[in-house]
Length: 57
Image (cartoon, rainbow, N blue to C red):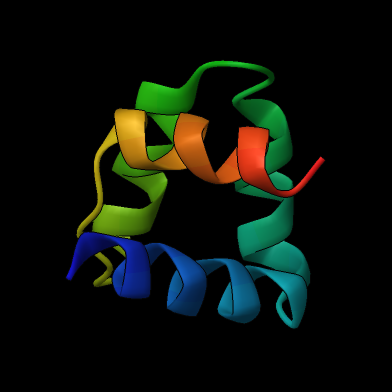
């Protein structure tokens, strides 16, 4: 479930400059990205985000 939430959040961030800036301000802090996602209604873990990054490089 959380991978779908993550992918949904990333798609939303891609189309929203404000969310994208929030993610960029996190730098490499995956926990920060997960918190940004949660603030915007998407629940996923930092570990899921790390896994997604590895799979999409």
